[in-house]
Length: 402
Image (tube, rainbow, N blue to C red; front, side, top):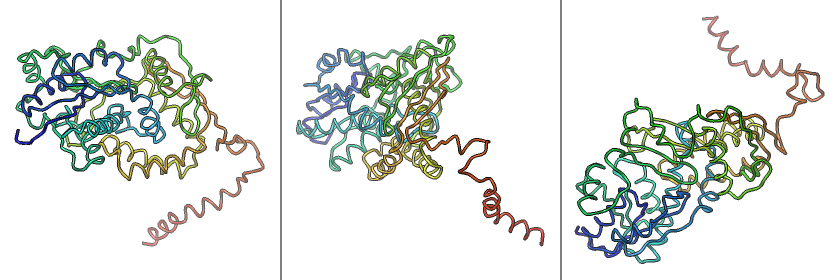
């Protein structure tokens, strides 16, 4: 390589891509490689990561626990926004990337590194999420994306490269699909999943049981919210990390949160992804239910449009943008009265609202009732309908005249 780079900070997971990238960077750039891994809830995937990185050539490795920041500064804003990409994907991988990239840039600054690197492919969305964050923090940063440079064209080639250079990898030719896990979800893609007609095998799932194997008796869970943020389960308060972990177990035991979709990538192609998001599914369902009694009609309509745009921004990597910050300001205003609790019924993969109540609920039984009340005079509806239907009446008269 022609660039003079002495030190690189690599976003490192210990998976197939980053396992060989350390060796590849040293071989091609003759540089020092510092590995960086963010603990965003991978659990056992972090085990042995330090030894693996050093063994494969990294000079050092940073492993930072970012779970609290992940929940409070990324997941909760996304939850309050109600952001769901293409109506199904709860954005588990997407929302973690800007946090990881930001921390990576902080380490690069601390280490006085010449460049940052990642293991994202040239076909995927993650390259956008990492690099747009890099550029937002330092527009002059040097970025190395091996997948867009090297001669390796597939995961099969990567496995051959690893075997040739004695690099241990966790993927085999028999089971080549990749996965990404954090506190919010786990995703699966590639390999056998590239055929959209093929059903995922049951042994692939890690966070949930098959719905048909879930208990025959429904489980009820009550979520408490304060200004749109979940704070309790069944009356017991938890911090954000504990709350999500607990709901993952409760939801997973009932087969909640499995999604199999074909989504539209930012780069223009379609891809098939299988996701498990047990706790996130419960929280999104509960939050939407609470909003239904706390937000007025016009705000609800506008927030739905904001939610869709927010999801697009997260999915495409535009987290550190003025628009996302502006949308957060709007969303936070909508959440001022979203305080209350929601009861959810979980049964064999189904997540249903069983009850909701709020301190400042706009749902008033004396207005909605069919019985006589002192607030709403039904006779007023006549004039309202006449005014609302005036354009229709005028159009009909013109059509009749013609």
